[in-house]
Length: 106
Length: 234
Image (cartoon, one colour):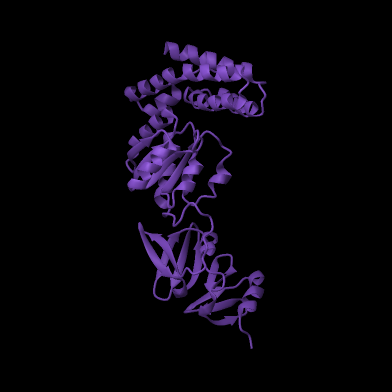
């Protein structure tokens, strides 16, 4: 994965409104770890549709953090999961790792 | 416009509120994380526009639209770009925003919502027109009643239609196709790609035109046989 999470989209939306930026990051920080944990739980239990639901939720966060290519990976992976396939699991989980590190340090 | 947001995604709600704050035409009066709470609010309050997420657990945005008899205008918010076709089945849906939403795209959708007229019975594609004698059209935020029998003809004009009656003309944001669905078949006939006429109002017929009131309406070659069939020819 070449692209890195960034705040470009959030900054464009905020127009300098720091409070808005902080509010958005707080939501990501609060929800992302829970969603990742639930996604992994469902995957271990082979509950693919439920895992796909979590990927769908995480997908918006991927786009908010400016990850355009990764967003496409998430779209494909969500569809795969609905068919019970996990070909893109590694690519998707690399994205999750990169996002987790980013939001912990932002 | 008084608007509400219905989206289970908190981030999306925060973003739409932010985009709305930057748009002076929008006044957010409610913010709901699930469709059921949104429906309860809609049943008790006057709302002009809903920013509606489609993909929600248990009760989707489409479920909501089927539950409300006359929904206000709707802008769909979604991450799924494959839902456009289903969205077009609903007259109340004026636009479709894909996440992540930009201010520019958001403003464009709001402008569309302002232009669109309020649907009559938005969750139903085709209405039964039997026993219905009137048509209601939205003009300047008022629903104006037009009796079918008073209509001379209807003309398509770009994104608008002109309804010409015995005494008045009405310009409405709609399409010929949409209005034809609301009209009784026995009275109205499409004679040209831009004209639907009230056959009872025909004064005379020339080669490729009919006279209705003082207006000469063109008749296309392909529509002429059907017109002739309708006439009580001697």
